[in-house]
Amino acid sequence: MGSALEHRLLNRLQRASKEYGLLAPDDRVMVCMSGGKDSYALLRLLMVMQKRLPFDLSIVAVNLDQAHPGFPKDVLPRYFEEVGVEWRVIERDTLSIVKEKIPEGGTYCSLCSRLRRGILYDTATELGATKIALGHHMDDIIETALLNLFFGGKIGAMPPKLLSDDGRHVVIRPLSFVPEQWIEEYSEEQQFPIIPCNLCGSQETLQRQNMKQLVNQLCESNPLVRGNMLAALKNVSPSHLLDKDLYAACGVATDRGTGRTPVNSPAALEDEISLLQLAEGLEGA
Image (cartoon, rainbow, N blue to C red; front, side):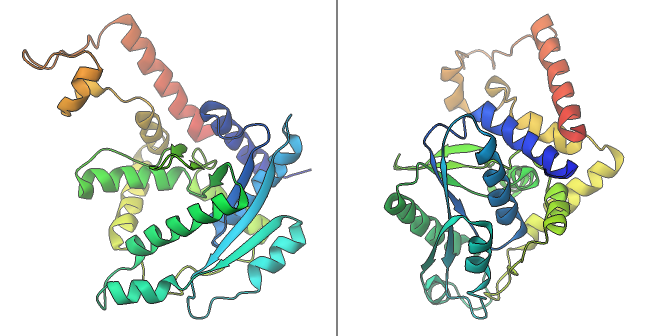
């Protein structure tokens, strides 16, 4: 029987899965394993869920060895054998490609991520995976939304479920409703054999860390900030934005103002109350 923390985590995974249809009968879920706390937690929780679901699905853990110097090749295979999960390690020297393309002193993360995504998509096809599970959590989604807003000039985040551009793969993020702090506590509780993420010698820019600090500062004065931000991403009002391409889809005319919807209507008030309750639930559940 799992701990109280594991029970809370499983509740969040089940909520996300039910709300977005993340898992289905006869799914073959490829769990992408980096060796960090998030991917370990994702694999462990999905394996626990697998035993409790009213339908069958299979799980295969996949690690992409990108030829980073000092990468401990034995850690993940040993862990996979210990927990009894099907696994595969893919070896690709993407680090040499990135170093060739990125000037010295530059950040590798963006190009490395694109190369890694392509390899994982090909691996999913080879393994017959119907879902590709990534370990992004609630804080990742919020920080990505802020990064896009402040530095990318767009409104967007990480969806819990995404169809790839070519339509061949479905990417899921079962930890979408899980705060990073819970994962940190769970990692300590489970004593996962964590592999450091700085083996390539390049770190993501300080922008994401700045967003993390910003959210933490806001939470000091209002603990519901994270829940409110996640709720906001689920409550988009296209007619109240400036994207004219969305207006036609919303039935909003652009020749005479923005066609704002009545914000004081009973329906709007009911929606606002529901969002507040959702935010409070995400923080306290």
